[in-house]
Image (cartoon, rainbow over all chains, first blue to last red; front, side, top):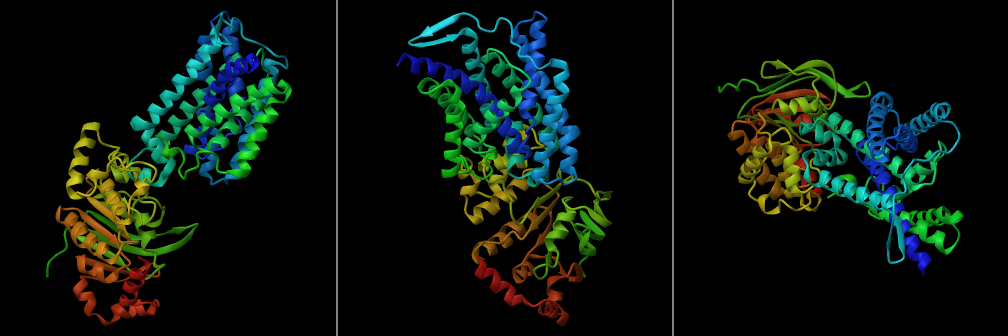
Length: 294
Length: 256
């Protein structure tokens, strides 16, 4: 029983990391209609930015901010100079997916000579131990949970209560009508890439913090986990991505306790496949998914 | 003979379409303050294409569009909205997943928060049915409520020119009549230039000050409704297109 309680604690951390990544991924898709398969590589690039900041003797929490800023700027530029020109030319949806896959491979291969094959880890990322019941977490893990909760509340507040957030939802629901209302949809989309890029970068850093070590090859895994949570919750649906993250994060850790850690992702993705068969539209299905947020 | 007002919006010889294939050719049209101009014609005549070209959704192949004295040809929809052109499309005319209030807020996106609050109140006076349902999601509205919201959303910016694409589509004959006679006419009475595409030709003729008949992408007839009704070639144009005024009305009633 103690094992499961401990696994529950790790599940809380895992789902926090996945939630940050999946909400950013699903918002990108919901508003800009772009399935960005380079998301995982932007995550890992941001994790490396934080690594070099941390290696210079600066605390990882500053590194996290640097990673988020890098993710925001990188994602914004990626859209402005790669994706948007293709979209303006009328490239098909599947064509855009292939473009993002190509970008993903380019980032990984450009990064490789810089960072190398070997795994690295942040310094001073564990913090002290805190125990509650059978749950044992480091202070940094608790901080990760706190960061995720604050971010999810901020995203909710943004979409539900701010002018920009409502314009994002309007643009997601009906971009042509949004333009007819005078909404500068291009500026709204730029904001979406900045915000979701920051979430992507931040998710990369916390995912790396939550691992003992990380390497350039982890980008694909980061993407698949975010993608799984987003699809499970309903593509383009931020609250769905949060629920998807809870399910994937918790099942991953509990299955590790019940079965074997090597197969935890197999169990999680097995459940994802099952959901896709029974409810292919995801758990929170609704037309104009992101627009309905709030 | 009563002269038409100085145009708020006018198009001169515009040609546009999809994928390089023109749907409307050399169309000229004008609407002035306080005037209702109806564009009628059979299905496929290019009525919606004309409106999309006027509001910047479709690019012009040739021709010019003037807003007052300013040439706004090729300007994007958001700029035309800022300059006082309000457009209600035939379908996808509201943000369905947003609430009624959020739809109105998006309609008033270019205003300050205080101005939005004030305009929501003023628009609520024009459509008294809307204020009690501000918190309701727009996709839960009935057809008539939805159309009122679509027009109210556009009114948030207090546009000089109001362009309505088949506002009575999918409404019952009674609701359609009420919308055209009460609301559309009243908006013109407030000094707005109203350009109306309408499939219910007879109903449109009853509220319009000026009517253009569009057939196969070209304006074939135009004039005051009373004069058009007396012309023999008026109904022939409809008959030639495989329909007539009465049939057009009946079809619409069946559809609703």
